[in-house]
Image (tube, rainbow, N blue to C red; front, side):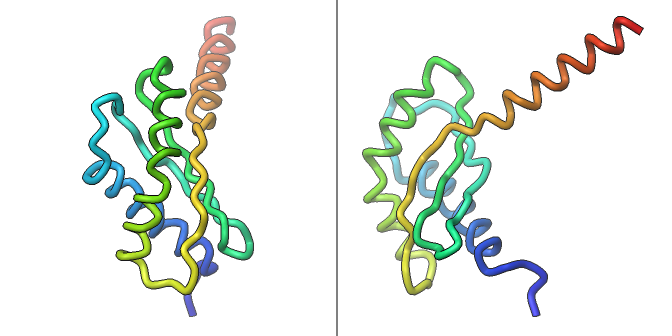
Length: 115
C-alpha cells in the first residue's frame, strides 16, 4: 500500500509535468523565470490549482495571463504524458507562501535585533 493518497501522488506528478511543459513548450518571450511550487487537486481530482512563483513581481499579471491562455496546450500535453481517466482542469495562481515566509523571517530578525 502506498503511503500517500492518490491525489497527493497525482499532484506531485502534475507539478513535475506542468513545470516541464512550461519550460520546454511555451515559447513566449514575455515569460520570465517561473517556478511551479505546488499543485492542489480537488477531492474529486477534476480541478488542479497550479501555484507558481515569478522572479519579478511586476511580471506576475502578464505571466498569469500567458499561462491561462496556454491552458489548453498544457492540458493536452499533460494528457499525452500521464495516463489517468480524467485530466483535471488547470487553474494558475500566484503562490503567496514565499512572500509570507519572507515576512515571517523579517519579523523574526527584528525580534532578535531587539533582544
